[in-house]
Amino acid sequence: LGDVCDTDDDGDTVLDVIDNCPRDPNDNQADNDVDNVGDVCDTDDDGDGVRDVIDNCPRDPNDNQADLDADDLGDVCDTDDDGDGVRDVIDNCPRDPNDNQADNDGDDLGDVCDTDDDGDTVLDVIDNCPRDPNANQADLDLDNVGDVCDTEDDGDGVLDVIDNCPAVANNNQADTDSDGIGDACDVPVGPVCGDGVVANAEACDDGNEYSGDGCSSSCTVEPGYTCTGEPSMCI
Image (cartoon, rainbow, N blue to C red; front, side, top):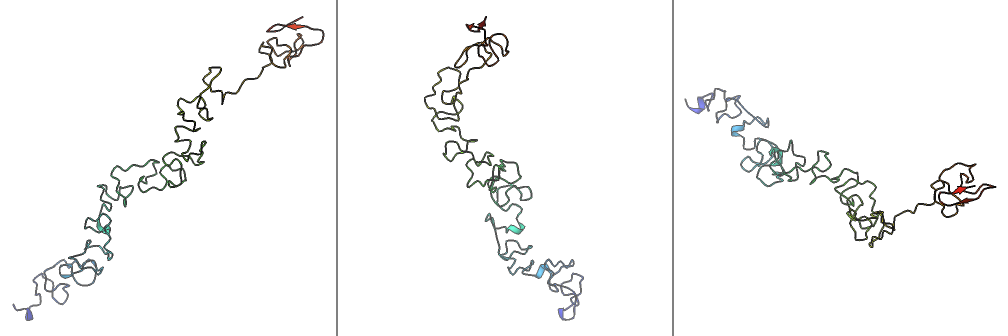
């Protein structure tokens, strides 16, 4: 039956007068971009102005042809935009390759695209400890390495783990009383009334903090008494 008298030139059972591709069989009349030109005969199925033969997403409009990972599959139809092997729907950095999905602060934003890796509200570019939370940015020795991640806080050349005064510079590690606390940060204990030791301004110390026994609660000799020795004996 000649075309001029055939009402269904392509034989797809759809009459030419309503067929969106009268010369190409397409009984399902699929028309992706709804332009009344069926996909089988449409040279631009997604209607983005880029011909299907060169379109990197022929079924999804993307006239800019963006292709982040340069895999010839446009971003709008690529299920792995950064090409790291992790699908975008589960990738914590879908636009930056990070197949290990490292996420230091557990905020579901991967480290490679997270501007605050430790989640302390201080941006990594100015954070003196970008991997350890320290919102106060404390830096005892002013070396631009925050105390929480600095292995040598006081800048005296002795690592904190062995420094007997980790917060006070003392590279000689002097420790006169050998108590494990360096002299530079060791606070001397003053005389304590009632410890049985007569020290500094104490006139007596009988080992208690009571008055009326010759040595008062403030370690002074009470009227009518004479105190000697340690602990003091008052008569």
